[in-house]
Length: 179
View 1 (cartoon, rainbow, N blue to C red):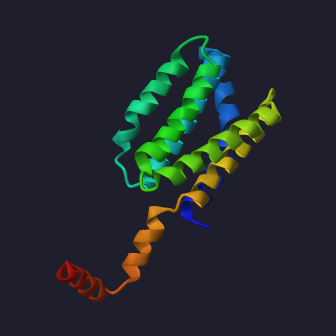
View 2 (tube, rainbow, N blue to C red; view 1 turned 30 degrees about the vertical axis):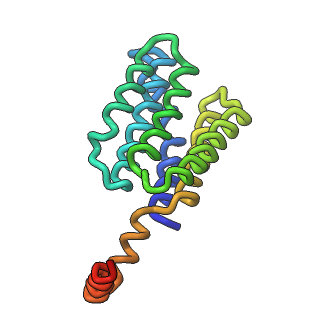
């Protein structure tokens, strides 16, 4: 199991346990629906920062997509649009910004991860705090599938790091001389 899969699973469990209490705590000062949207935005922001770290991207690269999502979270009366935009931003950050090496495979992985997450959430139909926690956990379980489908760049770099530098240099020189 790669670190990105393991961390996604652990982060999903933590999110499932924390999102509803934080939303309940914020509900008093700012209202229930706004608190829930802002809590989900914060949850996605932390996950996006993890994705940027795994993809070796600067955290500033996720500012624009997360800023758009924050605008949707603060817009009153927008619920379905916020959720759809949040899914789009997750796909954009993960496949468009952080992991851009395999576009066709990433498209397939995003379709499975996002589509499966939506399907599980809709099938589960969360209405209470406990059912929302389970739906969030199920959603992150589906998000971990992305890293099964798209190979992690850390795996490739660790394989080349174990290779002897002299052998790598010899191979590079031979390749240059053959051209």
